[in-house]
Length: 190
Image (cartoon, rainbow, N blue to C red; front, top):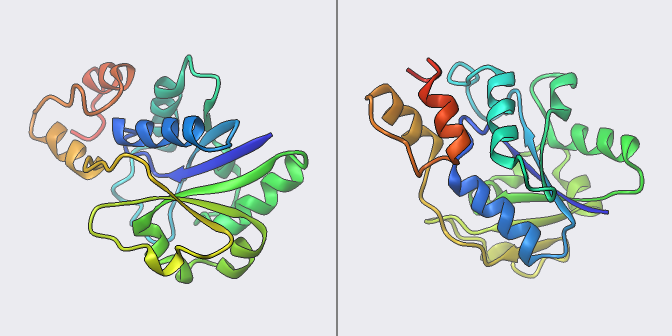
């Protein structure tokens, strides 16, 4: 099975994430997209993160009913901070028959050379890249392991959504309905 791994804090998961995940599973050769909730990204502060299990629950709510999208807590049991190469090695051992690819935004591709063992990732895994506003990916256009996917450009951010919640604004339509209902009843981000 061809599985795309869409790593993220998903703090919270929003419609931009869901559109990208759905686009990747519908318009590439992937059979499934696993939305991997990362407990701690080595490049981000963890102080702004909601609880791991709350973020996982929101991704589960968002993916519920779509058998091609799935929430994954695979990094919860791995050492922190989460390094993609370690997760990939673990997943390959656990699911040897799956063919894993990474899904990332052009903003991450620009800094990819700073990732732990990025050369090994490029050598052994395909990377599906969706463009992000104001980030240029042309340097990788002809790399054999990197496929630039013409996915919809989204300018929705989890930072904006968290601020909207703190300001008492509605986030309806910015997040999937079940996530909106969950957050409407929760003190998270307020």
